[in-house]
Image (cartoon, rainbow, N blue to C red; front, side, top):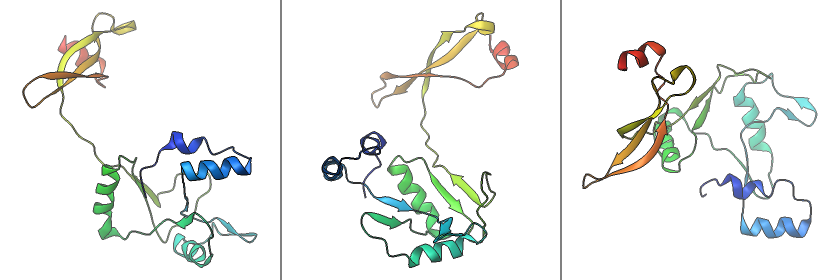
Length: 170
């Protein structure tokens, strides 16, 4: 399994020509990863806990590039999160195995965990503020300090400072 490349796979979504589909599948292979099932053979499964829904999924004989998302128990989460960070993925979703699926709502049975990506930067300057901040500053201009002390530009970032903090800094 490699890194997910959305732009490469997005070009395959609406293809209908079987030869083009086959060609793109060789160039950009992809898998369909299933993590939950809400209905099976006409029976709604949302009233069952995730544990039972996964058991139903595990009993289905998938054919082709289809696989069931593996279950990672609690002690394996730190290693999984480190791998997610290495692959520069967005994060992982943790689900309560006893939780029911709640349509149209964010459930407390799901928790999205993002890896913390940290790096230190040097504040190199400020941009001019606009609107009500025209007399203050807009964004911080950041740089990265290299091993020999040189500073290379990184970009601009908002501060999240409230009005009182901005006026205090000025």
